[in-house]
Length: 280
Picture 1: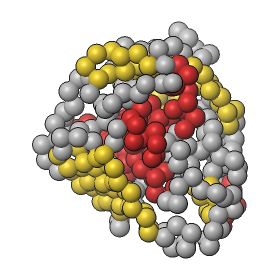
Picture 2: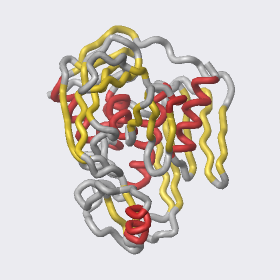
Picture 3: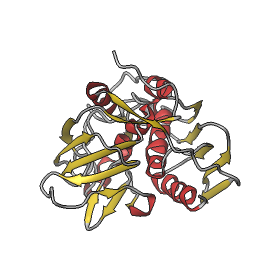
């Protein structure tokens, strides 16, 4: 049985490599990721078929696209849909890891972070000592895009909150917040799956998106209900939005802050991550 960290005060990496493969949500292509131990702070990406190529450390400045996923431009290579994997790693306490990728998209797996939690449990964790002290946020940061906003407030611990508001009766208005710990993440957030809407499927496919989406890797709402119940939580959509927020913030490292997003998006989340980096 895996013993997870109690909090985020120490730095952790994987005890050994572990690999997962599957289809990419938007490309529909097969993709593969090997998670490897690292003693370098943060997450870095390397490539299976270019072992001589220098690994690239992830940073919010690399965000190149935020339509329905977070995509990064890494020295000439694009890597899409990184948010679920990064949420899974950061959520359980991993602060250093090397991600060796094959393909231009991270595998979707079941649409949540749960399979990545299971991968880390399979590999085991190794403590690297005390985590470098988080940069103290001295002033609030608030970003607004239309009716959406995200804010980060000074705090002595990491607290995340998300609110969503959809016209679909199956979702409506939902709010979820928690003080984040590895245990709370694994129990309350990691299993929450990505979701979409039946009436948008044809439009998204025509735009070259969601080619790998299916009823076994995404919840699909038809307005009044769900095409593939049961939900893992009554409020699974808002919990998944919190998962997305965490994954996007992980590009900057977990902040010591109280973060709240209303009607958030990957664009808003990653802009907040960039602002947190700039405030250091």
